[in-house]
Length: 502
Image (tube, rainbow, N blue to C red):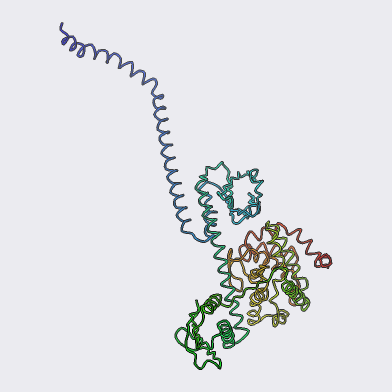
């Protein structure tokens, strides 16, 4: 038989017989062990399903993170960013989040969604050295994330171990730090502008408008030694004409447009003004009446003026029996509050002086007004001027003792409903926020002609209820942290024992 015939015989006869004889065995095997194959198929199906769900979860988290970062990049105010950072708990499957800012060697709480929760403790302060051991709070794990500059920290409180992208949060916290720093710079500029506006407004109250313009133009004439000057509105209306006897042959030499005002100033002289005079006038007009006081801290003038302010403040309190020890109580509380917030010695010294002089603007008519049992609208308007008056009174020493912000802003409220400017939350300088708590406590715990003062315990409850209204959460928590020891100090003052010690 040829090879071809053998092959055909094998394919047609032998191979089919082998297949059919084994098919029955294979069929019996599958019939007996079908569940094994089903289990293997189900196992691979579950693996594929798990990978698919994990991919969907990662994709969803990636979209949430992208959305979070996009919203954050559109925020340019620290308060908005703080809210978004607190809300980011869901991104990392945490229950609570707290934001801290480094001051010295201690992180101080700025914002949190856990401050009023009983099942977790988001402490007001976290020591830098003890941070490594702070890993549990009640039934919660604590995970810390600190940015590369070590100045801003997030604490996450969760029931399980968190998978956190530290690189992303380092970028986020660094961005927040930049916003905070920028806001501080802008806040300083804003405060400076408010100060200038208030100063000019009060000068106009003290002298009529024409007298104000006469004073202004006469001062510039002395600088330039020109023969005459005219003050116009920019549309050409003459406001004031200052002419000297020797100005008969004088001609227009220079026009100054006073920056950010509707006025222009023309100078007249028989000869061109010197470059030095023009430079001096330009600088003077740009400064808008600001003055530099070149005296050092040891100067007898400064010390005498401070002594005069303290004596005046004491006289104000002696004038009104209901204000006895008012400044001392405010000063004591403010200093203790500043210490609990771990401020520097220099900052505490400034707060101490500012708190003792915070009501220095209560002079003149105001002394008569505050003794009334019922205030009329005009009385309230007058009272609301005392921070501005006080800021001007202390201004001569503020280049050495920066207490102007305390005096000017100690009646502002966290919710923006205070006076004189209606500043809110972090727009209010920290030292003014601290003294505001002291002022409020001293006010409601002291007797008045029309009401009895509240007890310490009642004051504590009232301050608690004013959280995020009159005071920030940080201020309220710091006050509650010291209120027991504070009561002892205040009681000593009220029983005159504190006066002797002072």
